[in-house]
Length: 374
Picture 1 (cartoon, rainbow, N blue to C red):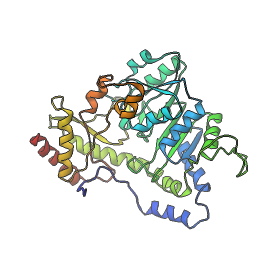
Picture 2 (cartoon, rainbow, N blue to C red; picture 1 turned 30 degrees about the vertical axis):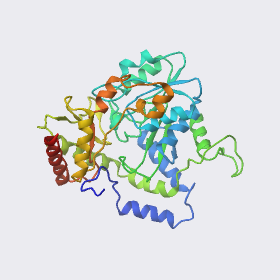
Picture 3 (cartoon, helix red, strand yellow; picture 1 turned 120 degrees about the vertical axis):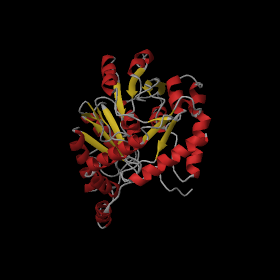
Picture 4 (spheres, helix red, strand yellow; picture 1 turned 180 degrees about the vertical axis):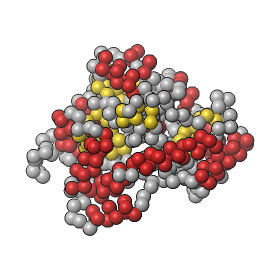
């Protein structure tokens, strides 16, 4: 379908193109100097000891589960309102995902509901900074510390956000960011692991490179490993993008502000707000329909917007109701009522760094027209 306004777009300039071309002109397309340069940039930006670049956020999260030793018999607390990768990596390592319902305002895992889900089998928590918001993460980490649980922070949507001055990616023993083209910055595909633990970092480096140790020869392998490397081509793009990150965060804040002003008088939807104490690095701009609307009406609204050339999407459906998850663990609709209520009403509007004022006005005008037709 040809859209007049797209849901997301990367922000690529000549500096990124030239950075990639420089690598292509070199003999070092992978495992070259750009890999370490990219990692060091993240170590400096986040103030963490180790950064390990990988080929996706999913790969990063999975390697963290392996380094932490999570596996069969372990229970890992997480949110049912997220992207599927958060759940997949728990299942992939053999552990069992245990869902904690969300806060109806922040949309993150509700801290007040965590302790009721902790059992003797609980090994860790994988909280997600949904849509870029770290709201409640100070409380989540405090609960984890109280119960001696490891926090694996899924920061894949939150690069540039902070809570009370603490940057997202600093709340967990390990954390992971992702760089798909709809994120705040991109490497095309890619992700990165952050930790202050020397042993965990070395394990992740080994696992991403076919089980090779830091001092191993090319054909010597210390353990079962994976090819989760990020090429120097991707890293060069990432270095150029990271240098512009503050620019990106400011651009996205301006787009969010435009939408907020344009939607201020529209009582049929509610706009996302910046939680107290948060610096928000907006990943997506997700509105919620008023309670009177059904999920079927929301889905119809999405179809109507598409027909008018505006690309929108539902963010997120409840993960616990994904057919393979519901079948495997016996979940049924209604098990997590706050997630259900939120998921039926959400719609992501077109959102990216360079969305113009004219495009934002068009999106809201078409939204108003489509709401009038429901």
